[in-house]
Length: 372
Image 1 (cartoon, rainbow, N blue to C red):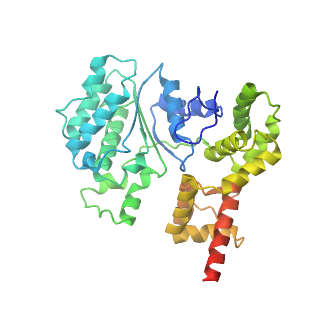
Image 2: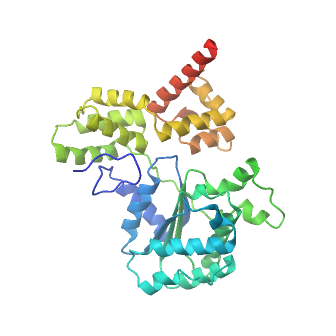
Image 3: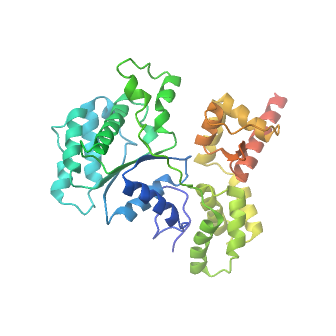
């Protein structure tokens, strides 16, 4: 029997999932065009699941290598040689179940490649007459590393040469993470990681300026939430008013994937399958009282950035209008973390659950300060 899932990747055969085939078709069209792009969305927004489903959608036309550097030790980034070795090992492992000859998979384990120049030649050889799509998940976990930025620079330069028919390289590259890799220079400078030299300026100014815009809405609309409930209803035959409940879930979550699945999970497991408006509201109450990694990150981000804190406080507690202006550090950060949305050119908290949660957080802090 399937269940609702809020941890890790969602698997169609094991979990109740929203039908995102429309989104996948849009992403697939970008791959078919040969775009290099980044899927930047907040934590627990379905990025890993989307990559997994996309890989399946591409399998008949492309070779896909889906990798992640998460969990690799710092030693993997200490030198170009170390990075090249771990990169090629990850690609070889990713191709283990691909429909390609073993010789091709094993060719990615070339220990003679010890520099980015040699890696570039190796990629050329491996991608000639092959439509190979590279997906890198959790890309921002390693993006504060100079070696990694040199790798992105290599991919960029090979892409530009490919467009001029001067090279062979990956057909498409997809990076997935919370932070926009195109802004990594600013992130590094702000964190005091480095001051770029004149010779490094070209690389660090724009390691990913070739990226195509990714405009696919990753949130679930009410009809997409309904597809998940239809699947559940088919198994349980409870008599759910699917349009009503899907609409109510969307009203509280604005389609934030984790929150959608968590409400459904609470109703199914903790509330005796009470698929009514009251059940949705009680599930929201349960979620507001629990600890989870999404909320922990939300509070940490508010505490660690005064401008972000003040922006959200002004909107929620003081009722001030704050313009949703791209380029404003606080607005950009709040967008990155999925805390706000653009509402008629004004910044608004992205969903009702976040509104309730953050209001309680601000009130609790105020009461604590007044007791001490």
